[in-house]
Image (cartoon, rainbow over all chains, first blue to last red; front, side, top):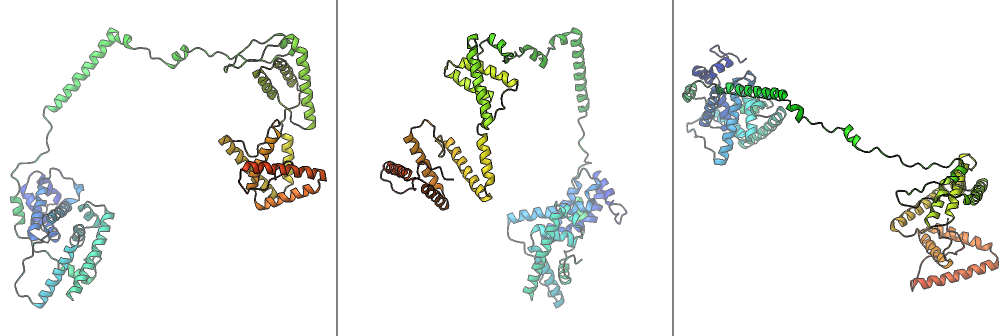
Length: 187
Length: 339
């Protein structure tokens, strides 16, 4: 049973209503989980527009569900899985489409030293995560940023727990190396 | 939040914060929802259930009607055929006929007076001829001779032939058309009756005395000497086996008694040359020492004869080689093979 939201209704109840095509319940679910799947998508794609597209597509897939069982790990886990796979698909397609990355728009506003340092660190972290392979990046995003247990993250990525733990170990190691290298470059 | 990262790394990763989601996300998603009604699982064809049920009902009723009709008309009794079973098949096969059993005549005189019918074996070989009364004295005498010989050999510790061996000999006589085969057959019948009465000595292998002597000699040897003998036996066995496979005569095969002396000496020389080639230097030295010791005990005449035979053999060998040189030292013919 999923925890009840601020409106006092659990995800399962809302999902049952969604199956009956209740738009209000769907809106409540989107309001409750939209932010999370957007974060996952943004950290995976590095693009806010694309992240929102992924989040909306994930919610629409939830709407198109005709059956739902409580054994699927809850609406949140299901949406995380759909969003992760959607991001991986998009990254795979974009790699075939073009190797050029969409440059982030530069912020021309003058920054104080502290703000500049924070921005540099954020950029370093972003670059380090962006350098990871897609699957390793997804493992880091789900477990580190979204606090998903390894088993749930493995389910979200359609991996068994051993394979996921191996993937996560490699992701952490690669991320540490990348962060250390960026620090040395910055120094 | 560190989760496997150091504090510095965690702090750096903590800077990786996404921009806030634009407000109104839920409204935007809801606006994209298709304007369709309630999605319900696809229902079955409303008439499908009745249709399937009707088919099953018709099939069941039809099969029942057919069964009842067939049973009432008695057609099942006609169509059902008796299946061939094992008993039927076995009954159709003729019972095996008993093979004719050859019963030894007991007592002997009754058997001799009533000649056996001629029976041809499956191989078509000739059956023993029937006995006649006139052969009886000769057969009795022959049987007595054979029995006396068997007892004599038994007393001397030599091999004693079995009845089967005598029968084989009789069969060979029949095969080559020997007229004494009839007498031998009658004698064989007498011998069989004597064997049944326990009057004949137990058959013993012809080579048993030699085997006993050989075992005694082997037991007297040291383990090293025994190993040498065993190795030599194994080598001879392999040679015989190889010769049997290739069809050639074995190197150590004993020549037949009727072989001409010259060819026998040539074969012996050939065999000894082969053995000589296989001997180790120690064995050759041992053989030479034995030869010298033997010649030392010879009389001058014997030594002269031996020398002449050596010269003859050497000349034969030189002629046989046709210009080839070298080879092992020839051995005298009257010397046994090296042990």
